[in-house]
Length: 134
Length: 278
Image 1 (cartoon, each protein chain N blue to C red):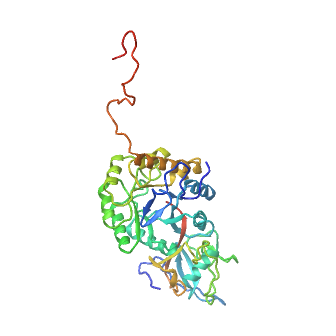
Image 2: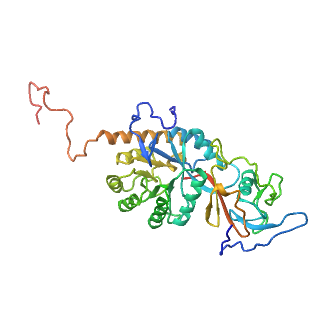
């Protein structure tokens, strides 16, 4: 995935700790998230549809807003598990993740290539869904 | 009042043959509802059902787990088409990106295009609006643009291929009704696409008036969702819309400066004494 030259999230530091895969720093909906390398947009979409929101602990901290069901405050994706068995965001229509859309670095990424779109350090991701409006 | 299925004509209402066709699609109702502003989703659902609408606008917002998907589920369960809008966009670039995201999210190529100039007035920015509309119509979107009550801008939007024009009656959420009925009448007179009054409706009488001015439909949000009894107001506005439409089609009498008796003078009794003639 291409990098934005003026991307404000300019810290591509890769966190590593014993026993964990390498991580890259990206921005998801305005918050910094450290995700495993080789995370795809499909992984991200699946995770967003499963997560419960948690309070942001401190501005600029690396703890993201989203927690997995296990309660770990970071997006903790298994980079090997590309087939994400997540419930669709909305109902009967049969289209997976209907109502959800993703832009990376100000460009829409069609859902047909979410699984094959791998995030790069510094990527700015916006994940939007249908909300009351108008 | 018991509401019927979404889009069905009510008892005593207009016939099924007088339907609005928008971007090639025949709609069951001339009322489009906005979904923002209701106190909770249950009230929204009841109001949508009472309105009889077949199209409702939705926004695209950053996802958070919880109720975001419920709006879409409510619309699906009521058989109402979700029309994505670009609410909250201030530039053409933002609006075009949101429209592209909405197209991927919903697999529809309709978009209610809003490009706002500032947060206080919420008036459309004509320059950015035209820019966005031209981009989107050129890439196959069916664009329904929220615009001001300027007949010249409305004509430009139609010329670049918008599927309708949606002039405001008054600023969004103001409930001031139709501030410039002459301008709306001029837009109606010159438009070759449907004219959907969008923004400023405050009450049922505003809705009837807009239809009597010749609008083809209405988009109503705050007047319903922020009313004290949204489902009742939805029903009232739907009824007023039909009444206004029928009134327009019935061909009203022209306003007159002087009186015109409805009962002829011929055949009146004559008094035996005195006179009853003027």
